[in-house]
Image (tube, rainbow, N blue to C red; front, top):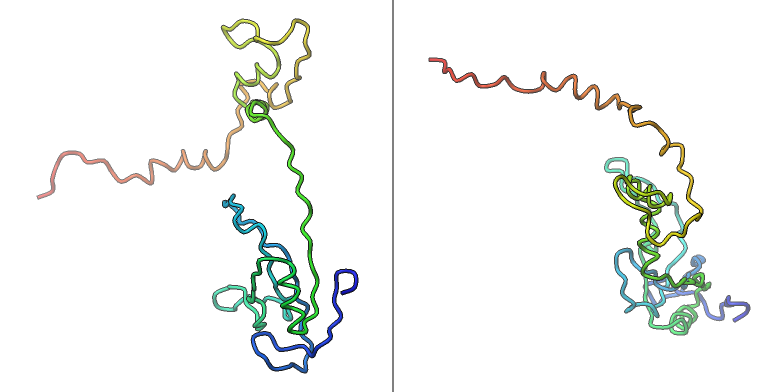
Length: 193
């Protein structure tokens, strides 16, 4: 192994069989298994995956629009418990391989109060805007915890816009104009004999 890459010693075998192949086999990429969205578990953190570089581009199906490829190795995904096991497997098959190390995630510790402080800063409610600017809300006293003469946040141009200036949405306006025409006639209480 030289600089994280290998030099094939054996004839490359066709993936999925024990017979050697005459055509070159694509590079096998060895990487950590990615964390799936919505699953915060750490059960598969140490797992490594071997996947192949695609030989052909993915093409949309003319009828359904699904993407597909004539490459049989595109869907091949082999999992291993360690990097050494994945490398040993690729070398035993004579495949050229590369290891893709994931970037190191640096978690910044955040206090529980910072979570709510960030939400208050992003909020657009009038009470939150007054609190963020350091001004008392309607009918309230001074904001507790802020010393006299503290710096206040300046409101953005959207916050300074007068309340009487209302921007009408043309879709809503068209919906309001056509609403009675789309209703069925009301029942008058008479029946037709």
